[in-house]
Amino acid sequence: MGIEDLKDFILPIVLIAFGLFIKNTKNPNFQSSRKYWKILFILGMLNLLMKIFLLFYL
Image 1 (cartoon, helix red, strand yellow):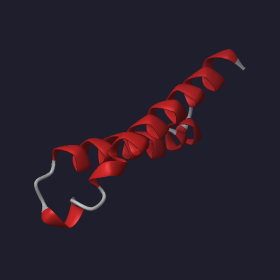
Image 2: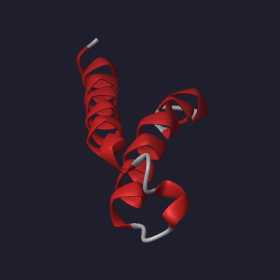
Image 3: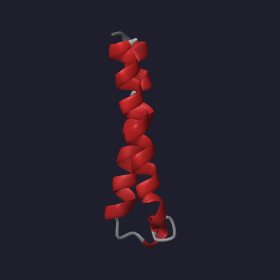
Image 4: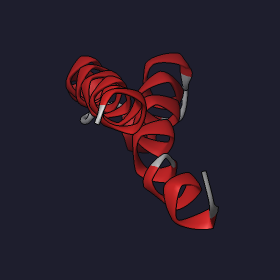
């Protein structure tokens, strides 16, 4: 597991973190995008699980 493998985990973690940030923020600039937090979170989780599966099982 090198630096190349770690770079692949950055995008899913950012998606998960940004989804949770949108859900918990009180900033009015993010109020219109609040309905998309579940989509970002689910896409991040699925992407992270897929990368973990591919890393350990292939």
